[in-house]
Image (cartoon, rainbow, N blue to C red; front, side):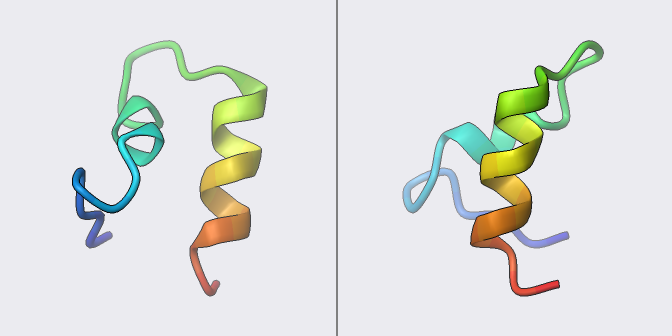
Length: 33
């Protein structure tokens, strides 16, 4: 996955050991599949 921290810092949190449901939802909505 290619995520630019400058564009969306929240995407980085998805890679955390214990990601939050809200973080994952926001990440999926921003990523086009």
